Image (cartoon, rainbow, N blue to C red; front, side, top):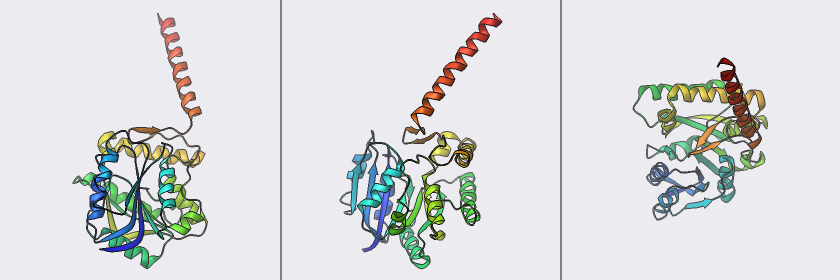
Length: 274
Protein backbone atom coordinates (compact mmCIF):
# COMPACT_ATOMS: atom_id res chain seq x y z
CA UNK A 1 0.00 0.00 0.00
CA UNK A 2 1.33 3.45 -0.96
CA UNK A 3 1.52 5.89 1.97
CA UNK A 4 1.29 9.59 1.09
CA UNK A 5 2.45 12.63 3.07
CA UNK A 6 -1.07 13.48 4.23
CA UNK A 7 -2.85 13.55 7.57
CA UNK A 8 -6.61 13.19 7.85
CA UNK A 9 -8.17 14.93 10.86
CA UNK A 10 -11.70 13.99 11.97
CA UNK A 11 -13.46 15.82 14.83
CA UNK A 12 -16.16 13.80 16.59
CA UNK A 13 -18.90 14.23 19.14
CA UNK A 14 -21.37 11.34 19.51
CA UNK A 15 -20.70 9.97 16.03
CA UNK A 16 -21.09 6.23 16.68
CA UNK A 17 -23.48 5.89 13.71
CA UNK A 18 -21.20 7.51 11.15
CA UNK A 19 -17.49 7.57 11.97
CA UNK A 20 -17.04 3.83 11.37
CA UNK A 21 -18.26 4.21 7.79
CA UNK A 22 -15.73 6.98 7.16
CA UNK A 23 -12.86 4.95 8.62
CA UNK A 24 -13.88 1.92 6.54
CA UNK A 25 -13.84 4.06 3.40
CA UNK A 26 -10.33 5.33 4.24
CA UNK A 27 -9.15 1.73 4.71
CA UNK A 28 -10.41 0.76 1.24
CA UNK A 29 -8.65 3.64 -0.55
CA UNK A 30 -5.98 2.84 -3.16
CA UNK A 31 -3.52 4.99 -1.19
CA UNK A 32 -3.31 5.67 2.55
CA UNK A 33 -2.55 8.85 4.52
CA UNK A 34 0.43 8.64 6.86
CA UNK A 35 -1.74 9.79 9.81
CA UNK A 36 -5.41 9.60 10.73
CA UNK A 37 -6.37 11.53 13.87
CA UNK A 38 -9.81 11.35 15.44
CA UNK A 39 -10.18 14.17 17.96
CA UNK A 40 -13.19 13.56 20.16
CA UNK A 41 -15.00 16.07 22.36
CA UNK A 42 -15.96 13.70 25.19
CA UNK A 43 -18.61 11.69 23.36
CA UNK A 44 -21.17 10.00 25.59
CA UNK A 45 -22.13 7.30 23.09
CA UNK A 46 -20.06 4.43 21.60
CA UNK A 47 -17.87 6.61 19.40
CA UNK A 48 -14.67 5.58 21.19
CA UNK A 49 -15.51 1.87 20.91
CA UNK A 50 -16.23 2.16 17.19
CA UNK A 51 -12.88 3.87 16.60
CA UNK A 52 -10.95 1.37 18.71
CA UNK A 53 -12.29 -1.46 16.51
CA UNK A 54 -10.47 0.16 13.56
CA UNK A 55 -6.99 0.29 15.14
CA UNK A 56 -5.90 -3.00 13.54
CA UNK A 57 -7.34 -2.03 10.15
CA UNK A 58 -5.62 1.37 10.16
CA UNK A 59 -2.30 1.22 12.07
CA UNK A 60 -1.84 4.98 11.59
CA UNK A 61 -5.15 5.73 13.32
CA UNK A 62 -4.87 7.68 16.58
CA UNK A 63 -7.58 8.75 19.00
CA UNK A 64 -7.53 11.75 21.34
CA UNK A 65 -10.15 13.21 23.64
CA UNK A 66 -10.40 16.83 24.80
CA UNK A 67 -13.09 18.73 26.72
CA UNK A 68 -15.93 20.16 24.64
CA UNK A 69 -15.15 23.69 23.49
CA UNK A 70 -15.23 24.17 19.73
CA UNK A 71 -14.75 22.09 16.62
CA UNK A 72 -11.94 24.51 15.74
CA UNK A 73 -9.97 23.39 18.78
CA UNK A 74 -10.41 19.75 17.80
CA UNK A 75 -9.21 20.33 14.25
CA UNK A 76 -6.26 22.43 15.41
CA UNK A 77 -5.10 19.69 17.77
CA UNK A 78 -5.15 17.15 14.96
CA UNK A 79 -3.06 19.43 12.74
CA UNK A 80 -0.65 20.03 15.62
CA UNK A 81 -0.09 16.31 16.25
CA UNK A 82 1.08 15.51 12.72
CA UNK A 83 4.23 16.42 10.83
CA UNK A 84 2.61 15.70 7.45
CA UNK A 85 2.98 18.46 4.86
CA UNK A 86 -0.66 18.13 3.81
CA UNK A 87 -3.76 17.98 6.03
CA UNK A 88 -7.31 17.02 5.07
CA UNK A 89 -10.10 17.84 7.52
CA UNK A 90 -13.15 15.60 7.15
CA UNK A 91 -16.39 15.57 9.11
CA UNK A 92 -17.28 12.28 10.79
CA UNK A 93 -20.36 11.70 8.61
CA UNK A 94 -18.39 11.79 5.36
CA UNK A 95 -17.55 8.85 3.11
CA UNK A 96 -14.85 8.42 0.47
CA UNK A 97 -17.23 6.48 -1.72
CA UNK A 98 -14.92 5.73 -4.65
CA UNK A 99 -11.78 3.76 -3.87
CA UNK A 100 -9.59 6.30 -5.67
CA UNK A 101 -11.12 9.41 -4.06
CA UNK A 102 -8.02 10.11 -1.98
CA UNK A 103 -5.73 9.47 -4.98
CA UNK A 104 -7.70 11.89 -7.18
CA UNK A 105 -7.80 14.45 -4.33
CA UNK A 106 -4.05 14.27 -3.75
CA UNK A 107 -3.19 14.33 -7.46
CA UNK A 108 -5.14 17.54 -8.03
CA UNK A 109 -3.68 19.15 -4.92
CA UNK A 110 -0.19 18.25 -6.12
CA UNK A 111 -0.91 19.67 -9.58
CA UNK A 112 -2.51 22.96 -8.45
CA UNK A 113 -0.44 23.45 -5.29
CA UNK A 114 -3.05 25.47 -3.33
CA UNK A 115 -2.61 26.59 0.26
CA UNK A 116 -6.22 25.70 0.99
CA UNK A 117 -8.81 23.86 -1.10
CA UNK A 118 -12.21 22.20 -1.05
CA UNK A 119 -13.52 19.35 -3.19
CA UNK A 120 -17.04 18.94 -4.52
CA UNK A 121 -19.46 17.62 -1.91
CA UNK A 122 -22.18 15.14 -2.87
CA UNK A 123 -25.01 13.70 -0.77
CA UNK A 124 -25.23 10.14 0.51
CA UNK A 125 -28.79 10.15 -0.73
CA UNK A 126 -30.83 9.01 -3.72
CA UNK A 127 -33.17 12.01 -3.49
CA UNK A 128 -33.04 14.34 -6.48
CA UNK A 129 -33.75 17.24 -4.12
CA UNK A 130 -30.58 16.53 -2.17
CA UNK A 131 -28.57 16.20 -5.36
CA UNK A 132 -29.86 19.53 -6.63
CA UNK A 133 -29.09 21.23 -3.31
CA UNK A 134 -25.51 19.96 -3.28
CA UNK A 135 -25.04 20.83 -6.95
CA UNK A 136 -26.08 24.39 -6.16
CA UNK A 137 -23.79 24.40 -3.11
CA UNK A 138 -20.78 23.48 -5.23
CA UNK A 139 -21.71 26.04 -7.89
CA UNK A 140 -22.05 28.72 -5.21
CA UNK A 141 -18.57 27.99 -3.84
CA UNK A 142 -17.07 28.38 -7.32
CA UNK A 143 -19.12 31.45 -8.26
CA UNK A 144 -18.34 33.29 -5.00
CA UNK A 145 -14.61 32.51 -5.06
CA UNK A 146 -13.46 35.83 -6.62
CA UNK A 147 -15.33 38.10 -4.20
CA UNK A 148 -16.37 35.99 -1.17
CA UNK A 149 -14.14 32.90 -0.84
CA UNK A 150 -15.63 30.26 1.42
CA UNK A 151 -15.81 26.51 1.93
CA UNK A 152 -17.89 24.17 4.08
CA UNK A 153 -15.81 22.44 6.75
CA UNK A 154 -17.02 18.97 5.83
CA UNK A 155 -13.95 18.62 3.61
CA UNK A 156 -11.13 21.15 3.66
CA UNK A 157 -7.54 20.61 2.55
CA UNK A 158 -4.68 22.79 3.81
CA UNK A 159 -0.96 22.97 3.32
CA UNK A 160 0.14 22.64 6.95
CA UNK A 161 2.81 25.38 6.85
CA UNK A 162 0.33 27.86 5.39
CA UNK A 163 -2.31 26.77 7.91
CA UNK A 164 0.11 27.36 10.78
CA UNK A 165 1.10 30.81 9.46
CA UNK A 166 -2.44 32.12 10.05
CA UNK A 167 -2.76 30.33 13.39
CA UNK A 168 -5.10 27.60 12.14
CA UNK A 169 -8.81 27.72 12.89
CA UNK A 170 -9.92 30.38 15.34
CA UNK A 171 -10.72 28.50 18.57
CA UNK A 172 -13.18 31.20 19.61
CA UNK A 173 -15.32 30.82 16.49
CA UNK A 174 -17.91 28.15 17.25
CA UNK A 175 -19.75 28.24 13.91
CA UNK A 176 -18.44 29.51 10.56
CA UNK A 177 -14.85 28.65 11.47
CA UNK A 178 -14.40 27.12 8.02
CA UNK A 179 -15.34 30.31 6.17
CA UNK A 180 -13.26 32.39 8.58
CA UNK A 181 -10.17 30.24 7.88
CA UNK A 182 -10.55 30.47 4.10
CA UNK A 183 -10.95 34.24 4.20
CA UNK A 184 -8.02 34.82 6.55
CA UNK A 185 -5.73 32.70 4.37
CA UNK A 186 -6.85 34.42 1.18
CA UNK A 187 -6.36 37.81 2.87
CA UNK A 188 -2.74 36.80 3.48
CA UNK A 189 -2.30 36.23 -0.24
CA UNK A 190 -2.60 32.46 -0.12
CA UNK A 191 -4.13 30.40 -2.91
CA UNK A 192 -7.62 28.92 -2.55
CA UNK A 193 -8.85 26.32 -5.04
CA UNK A 194 -12.04 24.42 -5.77
CA UNK A 195 -11.05 20.89 -6.79
CA UNK A 196 -13.05 19.58 -9.73
CA UNK A 197 -11.86 15.96 -9.73
CA UNK A 198 -12.52 14.40 -6.33
CA UNK A 199 -16.08 13.87 -5.09
CA UNK A 200 -16.58 13.55 -1.35
CA UNK A 201 -19.91 12.28 -0.05
CA UNK A 202 -21.66 13.38 3.11
CA UNK A 203 -24.77 12.35 5.00
CA UNK A 204 -27.97 14.39 4.78
CA UNK A 205 -28.88 13.84 8.43
CA UNK A 206 -29.50 17.52 9.06
CA UNK A 207 -31.93 17.67 6.15
CA UNK A 208 -33.77 14.66 7.54
CA UNK A 209 -33.86 15.99 11.09
CA UNK A 210 -34.72 19.63 10.42
CA UNK A 211 -36.14 19.62 6.92
CA UNK A 212 -34.36 21.04 3.88
CA UNK A 213 -36.07 24.45 3.86
CA UNK A 214 -35.66 25.01 7.58
CA UNK A 215 -32.00 24.01 7.50
CA UNK A 216 -31.20 26.26 4.52
CA UNK A 217 -33.07 29.13 6.20
CA UNK A 218 -31.01 28.58 9.35
CA UNK A 219 -27.77 28.75 7.32
CA UNK A 220 -28.95 31.94 5.63
CA UNK A 221 -29.75 33.57 8.98
CA UNK A 222 -26.34 32.50 10.26
CA UNK A 223 -24.66 34.07 7.23
CA UNK A 224 -26.48 37.37 7.85
CA UNK A 225 -25.52 37.29 11.54
CA UNK A 226 -21.86 36.80 10.64
CA UNK A 227 -21.92 39.71 8.19
CA UNK A 228 -23.48 41.96 10.81
CA UNK A 229 -21.48 41.00 13.92
CA UNK A 230 -18.45 39.05 12.73
CA UNK A 231 -17.49 35.42 13.21
CA UNK A 232 -16.83 35.61 16.94
CA UNK A 233 -19.82 37.66 18.04
CA UNK A 234 -22.61 36.34 15.81
CA UNK A 235 -25.26 34.36 17.67
CA UNK A 236 -25.87 31.09 15.81
CA UNK A 237 -27.53 27.97 17.16
CA UNK A 238 -25.95 24.92 15.60
CA UNK A 239 -26.04 21.36 16.88
CA UNK A 240 -22.96 19.16 17.05
CA UNK A 241 -23.72 15.58 18.08
CA UNK A 242 -26.54 16.46 20.48
CA UNK A 243 -24.54 19.45 21.74
CA UNK A 244 -25.95 22.81 20.76
CA UNK A 245 -23.49 25.65 20.39
CA UNK A 246 -24.51 29.04 21.76
CA UNK A 247 -22.08 31.86 21.32
CA UNK A 248 -21.76 33.27 24.82
CA UNK A 249 -23.24 32.49 28.21
CA UNK A 250 -24.14 36.15 28.46
CA UNK A 251 -26.26 35.85 25.33
CA UNK A 252 -27.95 32.76 26.72
CA UNK A 253 -28.78 34.61 29.95
CA UNK A 254 -30.17 37.55 28.02
CA UNK A 255 -32.37 35.21 25.97
CA UNK A 256 -33.74 33.57 29.09
CA UNK A 257 -34.37 36.95 30.72
CA UNK A 258 -36.24 38.20 27.67
CA UNK A 259 -38.33 35.03 27.63
CA UNK A 260 -39.27 35.51 31.30
CA UNK A 261 -40.15 39.14 30.65
CA UNK A 262 -42.33 38.13 27.70
CA UNK A 263 -44.17 35.58 29.82
CA UNK A 264 -44.78 38.15 32.58
CA UNK A 265 -46.05 40.64 30.03
CA UNK A 266 -48.36 38.03 28.55
CA UNK A 267 -49.67 37.14 32.01
CA UNK A 268 -50.36 40.82 32.76
CA UNK A 269 -52.30 41.23 29.53
CA UNK A 270 -54.42 38.18 30.33
CA UNK A 271 -55.26 39.62 33.76
CA UNK A 272 -56.34 42.92 32.17
CA UNK A 273 -58.52 41.08 29.63
CA UNK A 274 -60.22 39.16 32.41
